[in-house]
Image (cartoon, rainbow, N blue to C red; front, side):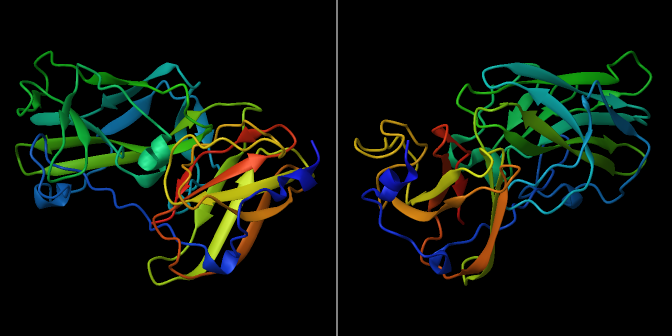
Length: 305
């Protein structure tokens, strides 16, 4: 369909008004009792060589999700939308009492716009409340496993990914926390890759909020040299592009509240592009999504916060 038909009833939203996504804060509680999500309130010694990840797909250094600083090359697990995957951690040296933890589920790139949903693995206890959501695997919930007594040294967290999850890389973290002979802790970041092939582009936003400042918007996986539309709304939902416009009937992950066209242009020769500008606080808290006009496929939803 002709991109000219996407002039739509969206109001043009200048990039100078775009908002910002703050870097998510990740914190990691004690074996089963956190203090405002801060593991260091209970664990004062960071020790290496006590844990490793197993059965991962390989190493990868992708374009980061919005709000997540560059992590470099990390191990990753891969899963298709609607599927599940087991992510395994191995305790090399538990030393007295130890517990397994997995966290990162409260990060904006995981929760924003419902981009990643997960089912609680019944073998893991969920902890929520006055700290970041995390899952703990230990003897009796609150007590650590005892090293050398036949307790498990390798455990798997099974995650279920919702069918509607856009492709992309989601940053999670495994940890091994210990007691006895002094508190100690080791963790490792890794990616959960949600595959998608040609199902849609991946959108990234890095900016400064709430005061405003530089903003970077980038995408990959779109149709090379084809028109894309960057769309903004104040809420998430299932707004459908109206009739008589390109990609009419396509359901977005955005709601109808102040839905607007923020930018329209062409992707690069490899289907990616980066936009750099400045932003004010006007749309903080709103959401962005990319529409590939050539295929009518959509990207992940990104919140500006």
